[in-house]
Image: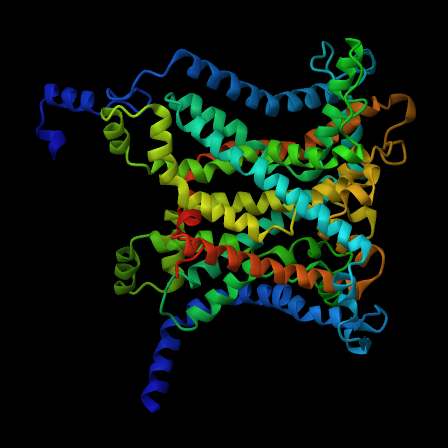
Length: 307
Length: 316
């Protein structure tokens, strides 16, 4: 016992500077992550801002009834979220892989680097800027429609049209993030052993067969990893992006879970119900990540963390 | 050594064996003409899709009313550029104030974030040290479970930060992902360096500032860029935590006057009505100013992307 205490004292003496260095970061994480985590108790309360958490009544699980009884507004938000996730996994997820393959096949280093610099850039613009740019280009008075009008070709309306909202949102995601998302695939591609291609070429494998038998297997772990992370985020779709554009299209077409929590809770004052929806969303997210990761392990992939 | 002993002919032979990276290795078949052509078209279109909106926005911000009316909206070229729109928004009023807020929040926030992140990442870069596991798990867990918007808002309110610019910084001052990226980079550094410094009697602080940080410029640059961009681009945290419009950062002003198309008049700008530049130019000038800082830092940081980010991300 005493030797253990002595050991602890030596370790404290050795590591105390490290511990002090960790303090500011740990305080921030406690204050703005673990404290709000406890704040989720309001999901079980009839929270009233003037009473505060300590003064509000506990109401059991009644806040969760919107979820379990299928409140139409909640269901609408859930369905929109899932549709957008599905569309994006199908159409947005493969694009960076394809673009990375194209970039990787460029032999001229300088042209490749210039292209990369240009294509990475939109990732660093805020959603406000991206939405403003899309309005200016494709809005009713935007560049495209002015040009179509001047050429007497009618107009093409995509902004502010409820039926096309999901398409608009998806195309914005494609514009903003396809370039940047290639970075991780390019890194994986750069690690592929060139000798494998040489061997394949000597065996007369066509470029398509080389792609199928050498390139894709080499980047498969990265693809699986990113797919897991994306699936874990199934219930999270572009909150800021959608919030900015809800006005003209209305809730029916555009409400997703995060905007529902904001509009219903912060704006509408239904604190308890919104916190309940947020809490369930968080839990489902964790279950999805862990589940997808388990699935990856079953399929023999490494996943997010190894077992 | 080999460099000193080999003859010019040998050196030339070695150079010939290792083709420069943009040459085609001998075994690789020549790419068919249509493949190179299709690739060129595809990449050109992709790059233009990024560049054209910028050119249009910058040109419109410089254009006089005549050009804007003639084209109906955005202009791609103006023969008569003027900085009137920039003068109007920068001579005081809503936009100038918002710009100041954004700059202050970004600079203060990035410095604080980098300091906290470097310290926490360094503290976590010594496996086996006291409390290493619990602190690491505590950091990682924040990546898995998000506390949610409502509790977050109530916490910020409870801490008295509503309508305080600190609400844009403190809740996001440490990002666990950035800590992990930086920690992975620190772990990759040869441990001999720190070991020998320790034998020479250097303390942890000296090792961090004199050995580790100078070797970690790439990751510090990239993580710093991530933080700076996040602070500069923050729009929702301002909407959530800052009820008074006079404290709004540039992104929120951009939303009000450009996305929501609220017209800017003499109340918002300190210009008289007759000298007011075209509304479209003013809007685009605000847009340009919200992009410029990113365009300025981007090239300097960009070269570090692969080195700084990928070690952390791929290994992490």
